[in-house]
Image 1 (spheres, rainbow, N blue to C red):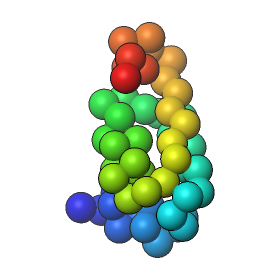
Image 2: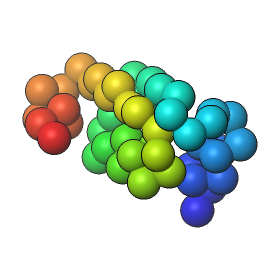
Image 3: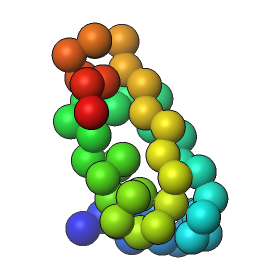
Length: 50
């Protein structure tokens, strides 16, 4: 998966991944799976209920 490769290449375990276009929270889930912290935000309130 491209997002997993990108997160692994551009961050280290324990670092924080910022996701300003959370949408379906795919990047947040991948970040947590890869032992990163995640901060997610989106303009739509229905997209940020995790």
